[in-house]
Length: 393
Image (cartoon, rainbow, N blue to C red; front, side, top):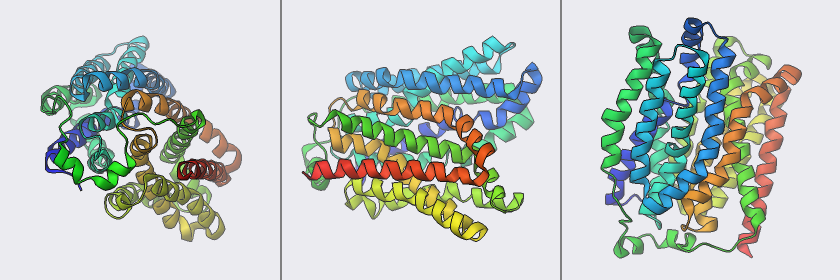
């Protein structure tokens, strides 16, 4: 369960993560068209600048994590709000292509130091023994970032224009994000009594760094890269894949919309039943869902589309939490922030490349491209199984 002191922290970080994701990762989907039209640029150039932001975030992640380990999340996240505000304000004022790329580069620095990895490192530093529940709580709240962000962005573009939209998101980082992060505890607040209430987690989480083979870290980074590649690929191409398998455009969109609620359902499952089992077991169960969904969809066709979307979404929701909990359980709490930055760097690069690479696969193989992500999912499952076998020994 989430401890009383944690609830306020989880609420604060869940809200600021919703703000951060809505104003960065989910922004180009609606902003790219009006921005490119006014500046006279191809839409691909706008998404290219966004890809640069993702690559920069991968490079910034380890250094930001180390800063959280040393200084605490409060200071780093406050700086991140300023970076987001400056980057979004710059984006709202761009007049040329080089300014567009510079603005997204600054937003990329903010993303590398202010998205999930930073929030996870913050709660691990504050609550090393019970961070798993706090991580789950944050993802539950921030899981609605697209649900909140896309309607707001669409409304503001219609009423304020795309420039006003960027400036409004920038203002929210100052008026909402800064005060929420300023209220975070400055140092670890988990008491001995609270730790005693978390004995099951304490058996899993070590405060000291654990000595494990280097290949485990490499395997974990590969699992996270596969997860983010598949998630981003599905977000970009799922409606097209569904239509290639025989669904109408309206039906494909309706099925694709099931992914979001399924992700939240998966996180609720992790918060309820799965929190009583080892994170490696829940991660293996989640890794199996996408390949199973693909096999059912390819075998039975459109009638199984909803099952595929539900399995993919639920597994992706649980794996989002696993990205925060697995490094904690396997390596311990010491140096968590910096380690998390390094582990997630390949995932961010895979995320940046996924729309283009998987788009080529879709062009070549149509719905058969799903066998690519299914195979990657099986590979991730095998690596997780190898990690579990080693830990048992």
